Length: 158
Image 1 (cartoon, helix red, strand yellow):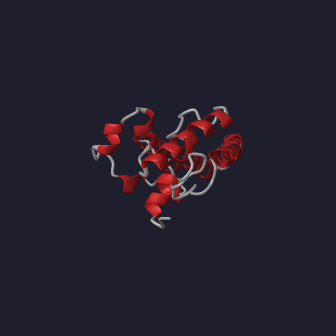
Image 2 (cartoon, rainbow, N blue to C red; image 1 turned 180 degrees about the horizontal axis):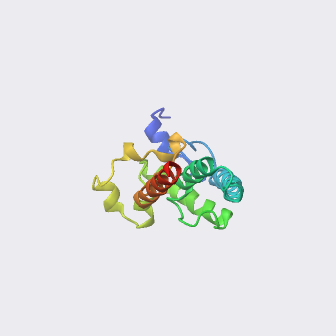
Image 3 (cartoon, rainbow, N blue to C red; image 1 turned 120 degrees about the vertical axis):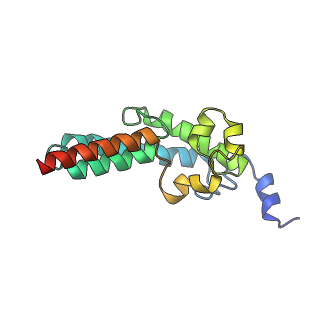
């Protein structure tokens, strides 16, 4: 019997993550449940932040941006999305990353862009994302956040 990790990963049953740096050894159902619970928790936190946004604008903005960074790449309407359904889509994406043994961005998966991943459009090392606890942030979201911060700064100075 071979003790080669690459051969062991290739022979691993499809019912467990074999390679993924975050989910290795876990079943898709375990991962889906965990992501669904985390998403539902963050959706509740998002609603609470928005309810108290008038009292602490800066803290609210920071919290909203953090949550948008975490989930926005998967669904721009993540705060209102069905948590189990979105968790299932994210799990399918993570399974595909595990199958390919490459940490490519969700945008490449969503568009079915095998060529976008392989073309070097975005290096795999730069899109580690969930392995570090953060998800890629879409550029329009960053620009919008910068404009909001600029607006708040102008308001504070006047």
